Amino acid sequence: MDFIQSIDNIVRDIKNMNSLVETGKNNLSIVVDSNYEIFLTHYPLWNNEPFLFAIGCFKSKLILKKNIPENLTIKEFVKIKKESSISAYNPILN
Image (spheres, rainbow, N blue to C red):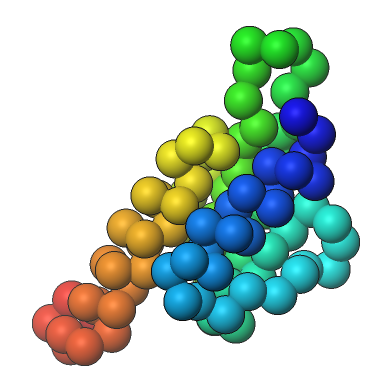
C-alpha cells in the first residue's frame, strides 16, 4: 500500500464520522473541521512497518499526538476531539 491509499483510508473514516475533511497544503495532510490537521510523519521502509501519523491543532499550533499507527489514528483523533470539547465547555479544566 502507498501513502495515498493510507491517507484515503483515514479520510473515508473521518467522513463516516460526519466531520468536514479538506486536503492540506500537500498530499501528506488532512484538515478536519478546520481545527485539526492529521499528517503523515513516517513512510515505512519495510513491509512490517506501519504508516505513522501525527495530529495537530491549528488554534494552539501544537502537535497533540505523534507516531500514531494508521490503524489507531481515528481512535486517537476521536479521543483528542472529545477531550478538547470537554475542556472547551468546562472552564475549570482551562
